[in-house]
Image (cartoon, rainbow, N blue to C red):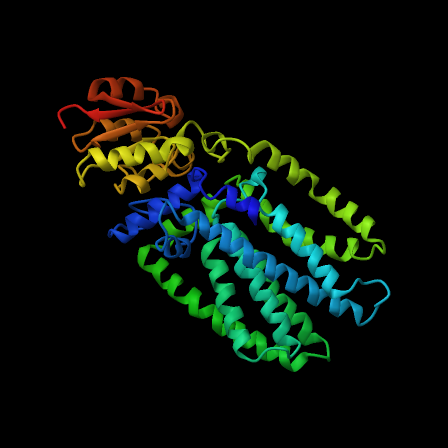
Length: 404
């Protein structure tokens, strides 16, 4: 957790910036998937509306803490369940939980897959694992019926935040169904399964109705189709609980403490190596998974625009640095917030050039990436004809529309 605190002040990733921007646009009356495009369920925007660019990274810290607790609880319950039949082959629940917690705490923050970010997959995974922990305890009779309702709400939250995390949330009804087949906890498992369904509907039903109001087709294209084609390193986080629990069960069986310490060290070496490459770098050089200069300099550019432009001015960050809009508190001139979104969802590769040369062109353009990255070969000429350089901020050219 102390390592995670190192990244609280680091530049926001492009994904964090895009979600903050989308949340702000929605707060100001914009329509998700139309006025601002993103490839996730709208539940993540509900959560991001509660945070600012300066505080959102703490959301990742809180999620990571609860993820460690949830994984430790699940690991302990699995060890306790397995010990009923083969106690000689299963380590103690406390030892299993401790090792699983340690592995989760370290591996989940790996800079290699941007584990330090307040990513929807991390937050959704936390909700899913917490729901699984509650369901296991409720099935065993250690918690009352309220636990099933809360577990269902948390399952719904996981679904509303990230579809990949929703797959982890499916472990809850699967566990309860398996428990219902057995005799030992059949009654509790069936009752908990019903309550989980009710709790999940509390979250999922309003989101489904909202998707219908927005239009099922745009929602489906963004949340399901586009997301399925995206290469997201953060999705490797979904494997962390499995790795941690298996490590707890296997390493926990070692009799000598020195052997257990050595085995844990071997598991954590790749993450430690990744830390060494990132932790001691200055904030501007920490890898954030984006392209160009966007992630490193979006804050400085955005704050300059906020201080030197009119409130109604529109901005285009070209084609990176989505956090610029959040820091500037200005609406984006295009619904697509980075080059990947343009390639994935824009109706035409000439869209950027046509917007910048139109009568309603944005007042400001921050050139984070080379114009060629935005998919239009004529973009260089358009910028030369319709914009003049206002200033340069940390190597990023800031252009102002001619006559504005």
